[in-house]
Amino acid sequence: MDLSGKHVVVTGAANGIGHALAERFHQAGARIVAADLDGVGAERVAAALNAVRPDSCLGVHADIGSEQGNVDLIRTAQQVFGPIDLFFANAGVGIGTDLETTEAVWDTAFNVNVHAHRWAAKHLLPDWLDRGEGYFCSTASAAGLLSQIGSAPYSMTKHAAVAFAEWLSLTYGARGLRVSCLCPQGVNTNMLNQGDVPGAGASSSVVRSAGVVLEPAEVAEAVLTVINAETFLVAPHPEVLTYWARKVSDYDRWLAGMRKLQARVTGE
Image 1 (cartoon, rainbow, N blue to C red):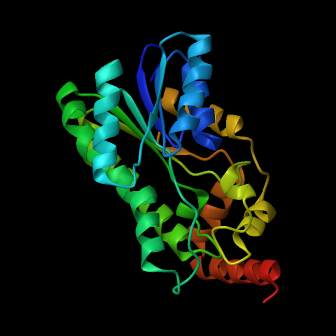
Image 2 (cartoon, rainbow, N blue to C red):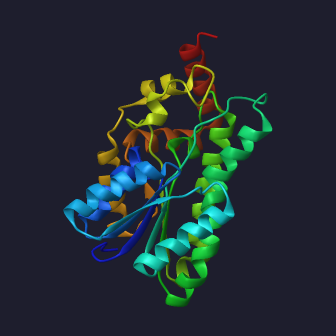
């Protein structure tokens, strides 16, 4: 897909990867709806992009942790810029640890990391299928291909996000829908830098020890390359594919290695 002149919605756009995606897509010529629960931050991103190209970006407060929040976002975007060409479900949360995690935290993790993708696709697909084209992108994580030491909710929801993207592609790919899924490892964002969350003092340390920490702009560049090629997996950390291959080739050996890594990082 050539993004020049296209209408793109990015959730979680106030900071981190989402902000970088909005900037990079805008540089490629797209009109952007930058959506975030932090509406002030989203408007700040939009103002900066509009200073470069007037009336090309809208900042929107959006709570995509509910179906109605996704409906409202899609309707607002369509009213301002017309049909949506690319929807990037980037917003995510890194919360929860183990089986003692409260039900409210589990619900939030699933609503934001998984159900938001489902709700957005549900309300985008009718128009896309009628048009015979549309592009759905989602941010999962390397944890969606591997796993996340220290956080059951994060591991489960990111696996589910990858699975949903796969299902969309195999179900609607022959009808014009294009799907890509972003699975980064360490990225210099608030989620990584706020400390060992998700997890009980382990997750951030594990991510940092597993490979290089990329800048959000580097991730956005990798995403654009994949969107231009209209292929599925965005893996900006090549080592993730190596770990993934080892996992599927010898599951028990991989699990044993992960247990050793966990023990090394946690000291337990």
